[in-house]
Image 1 (cartoon, rainbow, N blue to C red):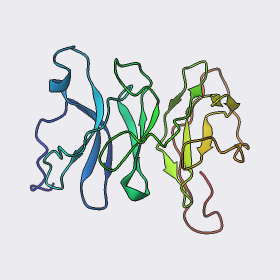
Image 2 (cartoon, helix red, strand yellow; image 1 turned 90 degrees about the vertical axis):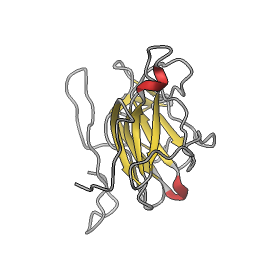
Image 3 (tube, rainbow, N blue to C red; image 1 turned 180 degrees about the horizontal axis):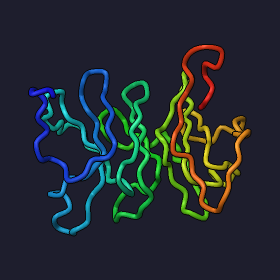
Image 4 (cartoon, rainbow, N blue to C red; image 1 turned 60 degrees about the horizontal axis):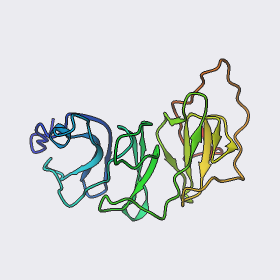
Length: 193
């Protein structure tokens, strides 16, 4: 336990965590004090300094739901996979990219995920060496194109039409992928597991 890191009682819930190269910590959750007026939680990504104090220069927009996964990209950009939801005044996509200061990155095209189960990301977001983004969860289409639970996006968020996963089968009406990994060494380097 690091006694120099004291987060205190800042957040009511926190699910996703990522540590930046400079030691600052990104946390997806909500601060109960922020939702006191409406009684509804306001989901955001918060940043804390290496000592646990809140970095008030980082302020993300409200998200549709609780952040499930946070992945860092080059230039300090942050990918956030949020639970599907419709929180009033929130950025409604299940995949959002934030700039290094926490603001919404308007250059990123958020994918539209759809399925009979609603479409959600249930696995950590993977970014390959070329900046392409791989998502997995419970969806049957991405931006209207058939993609069963796994899809690759270009760095700007648009669907990579050259990547059509195959070699696996699903059973039942409710299927999902809950894990992804990118092989980094050996003969299979660059391939997804």
